[in-house]
Image 1: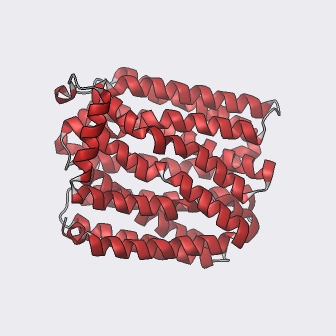
Image 2: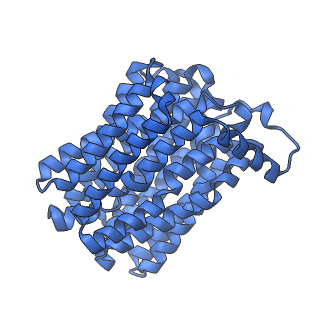
Length: 398
């Protein structure tokens, strides 16, 4: 289950990243609650989500080109330092009651710009740390770290908001980046000699796009991620509205709701790690995306707190299984020299399309109510996955 952690440099990197991710989730919950308290607007929650992700859509391809051309570790050191500084800025403005919705939006936009260059390097550095022998397990354990933090961070965020305030949560996130920065200075990834070329950046970009457009396997996998990102994952943006207006459970309830999805995601990631490099990944991928859609529909219909927690466990479990499988299948089916560019497109479909989903779900929730918005998103996901299975029948045979 944890075979890739035997690789020393990956273990150091994984632990540092894990600490940082917990801080990030604490900030995400506190920031969502701050926006909702300042504006009482579901639509503006969607706007903040849009601004935090739109740079990934616009700039990630260039981040992928950069990751294929220079030392990925150096990219990550710079991006983590900038993330830390922005967290401290948000904390300072909140502590001294200078914070306004416009400032939160500006900081979210800057975080998105940094993420556009951070994410391709973060995704593609894994194989340089563990090699192809442990790539499946390493990707799954990255999901374990992400979803463990998604469970731990929101669970303590609700309590921390009451104890140290939202500014304290932002300071805590800034401090947490020191762990991953220290880890990055420590590790020594294996350099990818295939990436050392004299091509122009635009030629490298064109080369990556041509490779992706001619590969039906990659197009099918990316279509699944795009559907989840556009219509599925935006339920996270609307969680404060569900907690306050539908279930009436407050900040602590919000933390438990997000943690339930994180708990399910953690269970799914651990189950994948336990399975190892198994056959029939395509069948499990198909089952997980349909399970995700049905669970989202159930969550939209729920008016009971316990039933909502239960449905979120299944939403988290099925979504992380699907995304981790897509990530693995992409990484093992691309040449080393193109990995950064392919993973940048993965990030565009995973995180870059989310802002449009955030705006869509925020607008639907504002105009029709949050429950109807979530129901429509779940139903559309169900229909899209059926069409993807029809047009890309080879996915089930992977």
